[in-house]
Image (cartoon, rainbow, N blue to C red; front, side, top):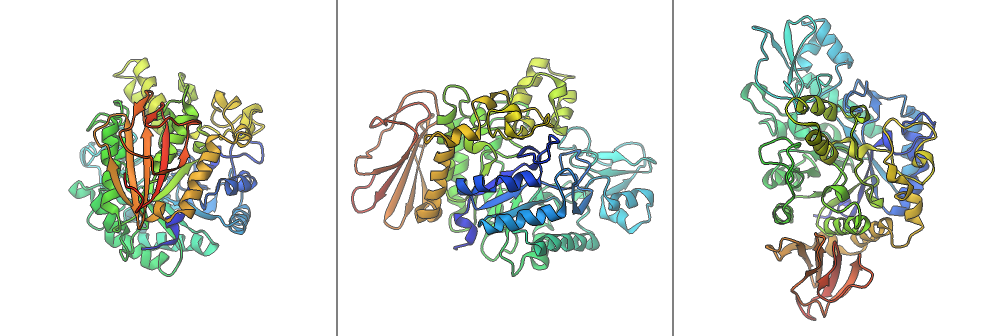
Length: 540
C-alpha cells in the first residue's frame, strides 16, 4: 500500500481560538488565511478545521443548525473559498469536520420533527413515545445525565448521546442518509480535500438492542457513503471511533474496504483514568501500559490498515501538561513526546500550539468555564466531591485546556486578538509564544519541523516495521523501526530521572536528540534520541 497521505502530517485548527482577524475576540477564517505562511513553514501538509458551520454553539459548533452555511462569526462562504484557494496555492490541503451522528436542535429537520409528529423529518431522529414519564432506556449521555429528553409537549422522548441540544440522527432512514451524502458532495465539489468524521462509529447504533458504538449496519453505511461521495476522488477520510479495536480498525482502513482511510483510537488516552469509570476519575499513567497499547496498534495494523497518531486535540488536554513536565522540562518533554509519536507508523496529527509546547491552563472559578461538558461535570460532581477534587479533575482533563487562544506573541491577548477573547488566554503566553519560538533555533517548533521533514525524506519512518525494546523498563520507551537495510532506534526517557539505556549504539548515527550534549548510555530527564543504522554494519 502506498497512499498519498502516508507521508503527510496533519495540523488541527480550532478556529475559535486560532487567530482573530476582525477583532471581536473570536478566531475566524480570515485569521487562518493570515497564518498560512506560518503553517507552511512548519512543514505540515493538511489542515483539519473544527466545525465552522452555522450553529447555536452549544457544543462549540459540533451542534450544526445548517450544514450548508458558514457561521457568520467565522466569516463568509467567499472567505472560505479564498481560504481553500490560498491553501491549495501553498500546497496545503484542507479537511473539514463532518458531524453526522447528530444535528443541533435548531436544525430545520428537528424543528419540523418537533412541530409535526407526522412529518417525514420525525424519522430523521430517534423518538420514543412517552408512556409512563420515564426515559425509554437507562442510556446515559456522554455529557452526563440521561441520553433521553422529553419533547416540549411531553408526548415523546428524543435521543441525544451528547448535549440535549444535539439530537441523534436516525441513520436507518434512507432519505436521511442521502441528504447527508448530498451535503458531503456539496463540500467536496467546492474543493474540500476530505473530512474528519466526528464520532462516526455511533451512526450504526441500534438503541432498541442497546448497541451504541460499532452497530451492525456501520460498515454498510460507510461503504454506501464511500460509493455516494468519495469513490473516484483523491480525498482523505479520518474516523473518530472511540470504541475501535485493532481488528475493527483493519476492517475500516484496509485496502479495498471502501470505508475510511484511518481512524482515531482512544485506548491510549484512557490510560490515566480509573478502569470502567468516567474520565474525571484520575489515575497516574503507567508507562508500560502506554507501551503495550501503542505497540499493539503499531504491530497489529502493519501492512493491514493505517494508524493515526495523536497526543492532543480539541477534546484532550495538552500532552506536555498531561504526561510531561510543563514546568522545568516543558520544552524537553514536549520534544520527547513529539519524537516518540512522530517516529511511529501512521499519519501524525499536531494540535494547534503543540508545536510550541502550549500548556494546560489552571482554572479555579466556575465563570472561567466555557465547555458544555466541563460545565455539566462541575454541577454533577460538585454534589458528591469536594471543590478541590472537582478542580483537580477539570484542570487535568477539561476540554477548555486545549481551547485557550493560540499564543502568537507577548503582546496583549497573545497576539490572538485586540479584543477580549471568548476564552481567556493562558497567562504564560508572555514566555510561551510563536514569536519567541521562531527566534530560538533550539525551540520545540524547529524540533517538530525536523520530525516532519524526516517523515517526508526517510521511507523507513513511513514504511518500517515496529519492534518494541525494553518492554519492562518503567521509565524508558524504546522501539525500533526496520525497513529494508535500515534500522531506526528511538530511545525516550519518560521520567524526571537520569536513566541508563542498556544497549550498544556505538555503530549507529545519532540523527535527532533533544539534549545538547548526550552522554553515552546515560539519558537525562525527558531525553529522547533517534539513531539510524544501515544494516550490514552492526545490529543493536
